[in-house]
Length: 221
Image 1 (cartoon, rainbow, N blue to C red):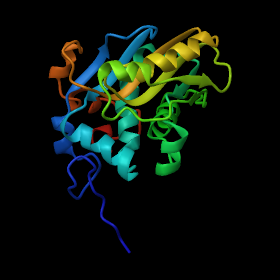
Image 2: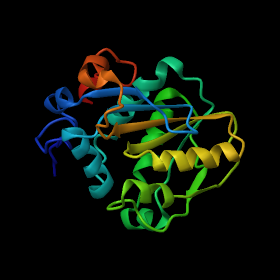
Image 3: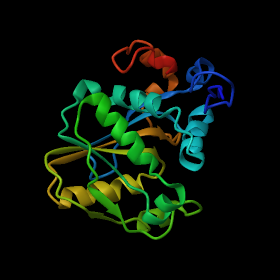
């Protein structure tokens, strides 16, 4: 039976994301990095169709936009792609069992493949609860990671969304303490905080339509 393709941003029939949803996404680019991250990059602002795409990936296992998301993320770091390895900030074992996958891992492996970099599971998350409903201060005390294997060189740390930065902070700290040379963060989306880069005023499509190297027409993959 033929199943029509559905856009994860708006639910309409067609590619995911569709051109209308892509036009609504606003770029972030480089943003201030919480210590000890050396840098932090986000593809777009976590509102509208971008938020819906990630919610459907995370909570409904709707993976149709993963390659497009990874391409949008790869564009953010390709000009200074001096990394030795890609890894991700994993969700808890409990949530992975519930969902059957880790959305950050899906994105990290796709980004690593597009950039031609090795991807490895370097971290284990040992916090027992998720962050939903926690205050900003509570989030910083609720997350802890252990290193599964020793990191080497410059690490690109991937996650789906950055809000307070607590997850990336804790993950990067664990990697650096275990021997990583440096850690830079890369996410699909960032909450629209006042300190984000002025590039938020630009549509994502203004950048991606020029990038054919990640599988053809990236603007509507």
